[in-house]
Amino acid sequence: MDVAPRLLLSLAMLLIGAFATTVQAQTQKQTAASSEPGLSQPWRVCVSDASVPPYLYNDPHQLGLAEHLLMDAARQVGLAAELLRYPSARCRAMMKADKLDALLAAPTVPNLTDFQFPEKAGAVDPGRRLARLKLVWVKRADSPFDWQNGEMLGASRTMLLVGTRAALTVASEPLSRLGFSIDMSARTTHQLLQKLAARRVDLALALQEEVELAMQDPQLQSLVVLPRALSSVDFYLAVQTRLPPERLAQVEAWWAAIGHLRDLPEYRPH
Image 1: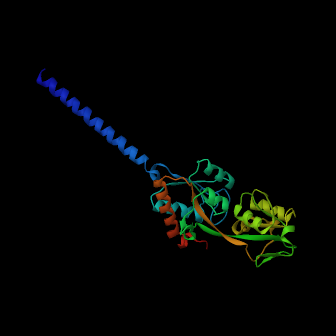
Image 2: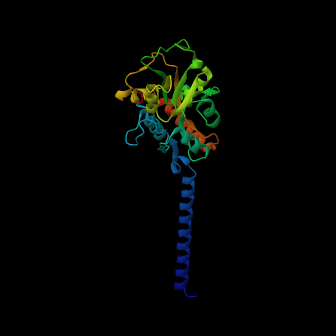
Image 3: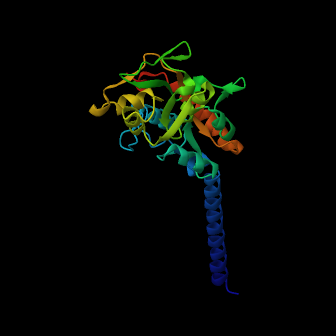
């Protein structure tokens, strides 16, 4: 074989080898990137479609304080998060079907069984909560009821029908423990208070911020919020219980960032 053809053949082989090496390097880089869930797999987080100002607004163009805290903490530790808004019951169903990675939730009995919360010394860590809300009683102005020292004055609790919003387990659980009859047919807090005004339930129990928003309706302004709340409720970023180690490490960093940021003025209600 002449020298020139041999040189051309050698050059072609070198080019083919270089191209193969480049393709292999790019493939390895893509594979490495896809194995980093924080970069290639955004966390799908259901924040509920309830409006609980100033924490949630059910509006992707107006994030509430809890949503801002979630997103800013995620960015601080290099994670991407996608916020989804569905009814609470659907969020739970989607989590169980592995269609979500996380949701906003309170540590109720079923939630503690189904989901994973930030922990410290074997208990849920309140230092890494997203928000603390109050559960308040609402009555009609002509009702004699008052909540004092863990007792409902004005009637026997076994004789009262208390309404709460559907799927609001943080309200239905304590009501059940206290022995009240419960109506959970209202889909929203506004609908719940309409039922109270129409005398279809004796009392209502709901989150204070939802009540304040609903009572902006002039038809509901005759209702009265009792001065003493039933309790305070903490809400957290809760995640799947079967996370792989790298995802678990990510959410631990995310929870820690939430704890560091939460008490800054921009994440606190004014």
